Length: 79
Image (cartoon, rainbow, N blue to C red; front, side, top):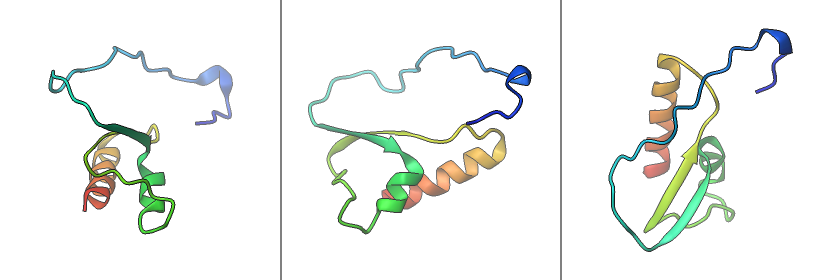
């Protein structure tokens, strides 16, 4: 995100990662931006994400809009 006023930025402290399910796995790892994956969906450039660990990130949006948009785009990718 580009801030027009560099002196008036509000930074959010990163508290570190959260482990959702501890364990081990052996498979392919694919990662990228959620919106980009959805743009690639249906094209020859979309990687095969079946049987993979998928790391996704999204833009730094906040509030209820983020959770709704993230869920909608994630469901689209899953289907």
